[in-house]
Length: 295
Ligand code: PLP
Image (tube, rainbow, N blue to C red; front, side, top):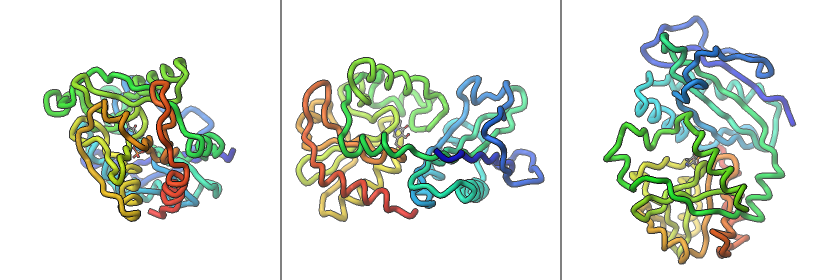
């Protein structure tokens, strides 16, 4: 594997003291964060992981938009997106050329009692074997209760639904749960019987000539890969829909994928132990289109 690249973003947000530099490179192999930073100590911050294919940051604008939206939901200072964009591009340029990398960018609330955000960009190579296996052989999922209703974003806005926060302990835990129970990943459902997303991915459903994804007003993330997936299907003549999907409808689907920025479209081949139909040729074309994106 190649060496990862780390850049700190200095002039990172509106309304905070302006430093002399916009961003600077740092050594990712040594400790860099202050131990009272609210990102690691409280999960109080936001992040994005964009795919980088052959040096191109994919869905770049959509990731930056979602970053700014997450900051607004958490009441963080607005990130200076032009600085973040330049820092990410500089970090990608500083990384050795690879087929696929991830660009993770993070902004925390900063140090306790100071609360000037800390921000950094981390570029790392994606191990091809694992993602290729998921894309070609597919994944097994469990359908798990997320423990809240589909109207949570409206009824409990303080829960920060729709923001990509650093509080991902639960998301990690559900993936361990899946592994411990013979599966690879998870589809979350609501207590009132609707399908949401995976812990790290959006759900894309095929029913005949219609491609569906659960509507994002149910407190789930707006998936950047899901959006590109819809563009691919529309170019192939499918119609696309954002709507509420009842959990029972999953069994009627003739294709299911979990879509995310680095693994791309992973076809679901088994759900709660039952086989799911899978069109390997369609998935291969979908992933080729996703990998070919230059922006
Ligand atoms: N939903 C959740 C909860 C996620 O964490 C992610 C990505 O990590 C996604 C959906 C998919 O988003 P994207 O396609 O932008 O990677």
